[in-house]
Image 1 (cartoon, helix red, strand yellow):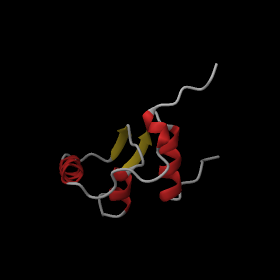
Image 2: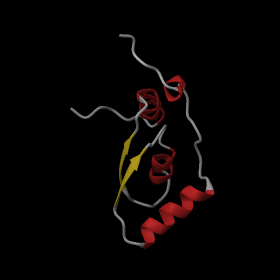
Image 3: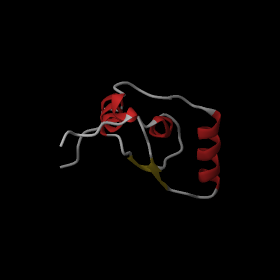
Image 4: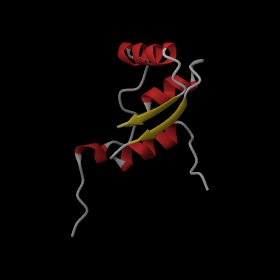
Length: 84
């Protein structure tokens, strides 16, 4: 059977990156509540990770997504290597 492709599997470049208001609001709120780690379900190309590593939030971050293409883009743009 052929591998089923989704709309999200067509992405090969960053998607919706940048410090959008709702992301900053969420990260500020989580930090004010004393949250130390973040599981980003549906992380896409990891725009929230981009904010975390470029600001002093200091969250431990884990991102997961259904789309392998988006995960591969995230790894590439953030220079993330596979853990052995």
